[in-house]
Length: 443
Image (tube, rainbow, N blue to C red):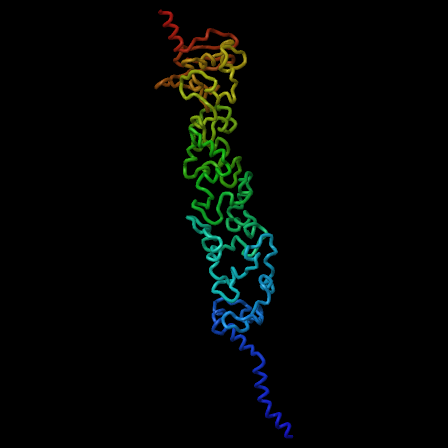
């Protein structure tokens, strides 16, 4: 009985000793999350789910605490293995984000708590700009970049696409720019668009409107360098290229139903600005215009010749003949048309075999240029013959009549003359030659 009483008296003492030796979980929590040295770890708006259970990530260690020298908590495993105990692996993608690949999850996430969602240490925009500076330093900034919504386009951990894009370039852009989807269904698509929108647009920001990667037409010249070279050497430049719209004056930037991404087909586009080139009553059209195009004679961008001409052509009524002056015409017409005084094949404008083109044009002093008698685009008369000849300040009526085997004209520079390929007469010289002959006779 005495023994039982003795043991009963020792029980309170033993219980006190046991509690003194067994660690108190509350005391451990006190030492981490609520103690003075770590009191701020869990006071932010967003708290890591396991932050209240320190042993989820940390274990007791004999390593001295840097401040107290007492036992401290070490990580159970090193990142990223530690993080992957709860989170699926982030490095399985073809292109992992550099911090993820290096196992540095805490570069972008606070492991305990944060005022920002997803435990980001600061707002996403500021966080990303720490490693990717300058993306917002532009006059025009892409919407997601301006608002800091970088994950609209980029995966923060890793992706199978370069630049951590969440979708292929053009597919990604169409998520917001749904109005662009019909563009891809047109017959002719800009090759740059097939390679991705970033060929022409900067995805973050630009000094130019529409986030263009270069100013004005310079963005076009990055691929179309030949056009840029032509303009540098050009004597005449197509005025639309100097306008604010630049290349977009004639071309669609993304796609078109016509070739070369033109706004309209062939000559219809040119006639938008040049309506007087072909009048309604002019039913005889120059060959290229019949084929609905102006570009056989004109370069639509620029030319070393006047009027955007692709070849040389004399500007004046009178011009000493030289083959080189008629490079434009000889691109389609036979040079023999002007070379030989007689011919049976090169031209229908002959009296017998006397070449009347040669008679008018091929002179050392006052050769007539083609536009002395012909209109270059369209006419009411056959062979594009003009109804009037510009002679100095005067417009002289040409009075041209065509027959099956020849024709006649009486423009004022010579008397009325009939020519016939089968029954030739005597073809008179133009007025300036007649005048010289008369002077010789008087002498």
